[in-house]
Length: 142
Image (cartoon, rainbow, N blue to C red; front, side, top):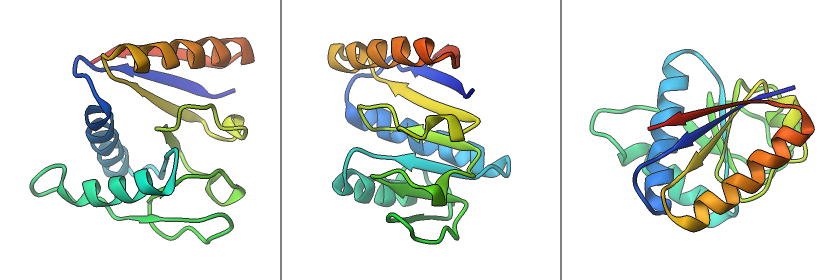
């Protein structure tokens, strides 16, 4: 079973979630972990790709957008689908509204929750689903 960490942000909005995802990916990368950032669609994957270059002055997070079946070369990947090519990474950052079907393949999963009501409602539903699947759940107020 996976460990699922819910990061509860005080800021509202999707941009707060995206910036925190970049911060988390950078921290994991610096700790020599491989990371996959799962997005809802290709547009958000491109936004995260750009943001990883600009979210903080002086940051360097080697990353790439990957598609299904594509070989993984960078320590941080971004994509809107699942797939066996990312199943070996240490951390999955889920920016998608749904739970990945291959969730058990990841030792750690990060769910980022902004303070707006929609984000909190969706996270409560994912929290309950993860709990029902038997995953270990942790909550962090940021």
